[in-house]
Length: 229
Image (cartoon, rainbow, N blue to C red; front, side, top):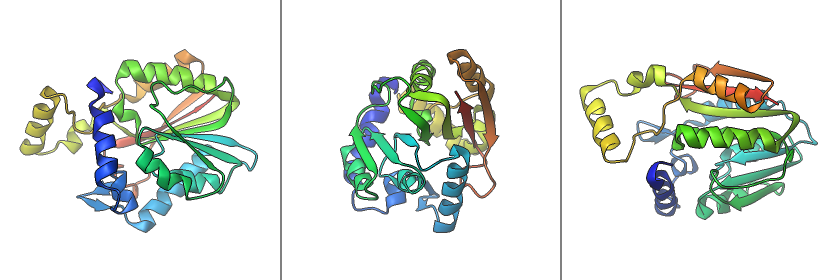
């Protein structure tokens, strides 16, 4: 995370938003309003379908925050390990289901045994890494997955649609001002072909860039990514 800006950002946000709506706690908002329940249930159903879960699966939810994704995953598999840098957010995650384990750690440095998980999900978090950190993470993700395991990385900012987001003079000025100050709005924007080549290079047998369904609140500037080991 560039100069640890995002580490500090999320640790501070988690402490100051403890009493906020759960979606606001993880900044899943549009025009400063939390995602609607119907939209969120649609998003969860889509994530579950991409993971292709079974009751015996052990799953890693990387940067899982307050467990809004993990709680749904946990209903479909054996165990979910939720990793996040914020202990405040993880406290909420631990209370959602009894088959959720939590671990306070940085996704850049956390370690797990080889071939430890059947499924891994990383939703709305890749943007907080540099390209170099993403490369290292994908090497780890491949190592942590069992053969045949599925990786789903969701809600990735699409560099080809970056200016769909920064779509006014004011937004573009704010983008460059914050970039210069080391406070990048949104974070890293990814090229889908770059991710595909990375996944292939670290050993995934298949990889697919997925357009988000239209009812996802950020579908106009984000995409998803699915790999199989």
